[in-house]
Image 1 (tube, helix red, strand yellow):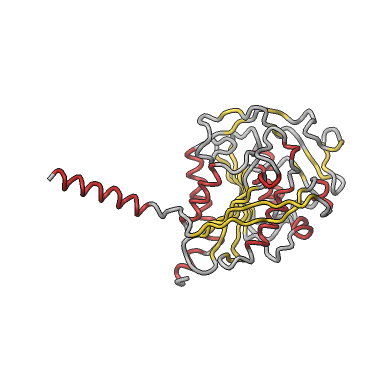
Image 2: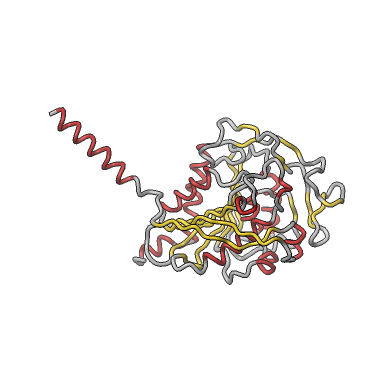
Length: 330
């Protein structure tokens, strides 16, 4: 009887694991090369395509399902691909949404830029994302009308400002447009020319009130300008959350990024067009400016992460019209 009970218990346990295992798993994984450029911020802002030819790689995880599926593109931050990207990938795959995680560093000979942000122009990721969009929109398993851009920190800045109509006109040659933009704790310290002229697509910004890396107050100012201009934008702030609050591998409580550079007390403006200046000194901005500080904090916040996952799931389900398509049997 004990042996039978043990056998039944093992069958139950392994059966439960087998049933749970497919959740968050992709039906197929592909690696894709993305041809892009490595540019200075000035080159990007002026639309000058004379940068260094660069090949990046991204991981496409095709969710379970048939036909052309919706997709979320994921862009990492200054530390490279981390636990938050993996966590969101599984969340979306479990919903029947494919994902594309773009590695913006390895192809450039980089692993991280936390302690030296000048190693890579801040705006390169935007071009990379447009180039990836061009590849994904032609993929036979991707619905080109249902691709959302989501990014974190430096990648969140890219996800936010990839929405600018000016940047789309200069650099987005994909023939497609992102269906929505989801920036997580982006750097909002820079004011660009015509930056309230954004795509007619929803923008959802998420940040933490305790963030001393990319303070959410700077994003609140930009959000208010966009909101006043009648744009479809929302800002969600989690009171207890710090920077990178959605990384399950992050420190609890938040820990210092030793030597990490932050522009939390900088005011950077594009003035004139194509030139980023320090608004205080009226000189070209540099990471050697006194306003650039060190040792911000990053850390995981379980409650904020769960709340953010719920909000993002509901948002992308609406953008992708998942319920309507399921009801139609598609």
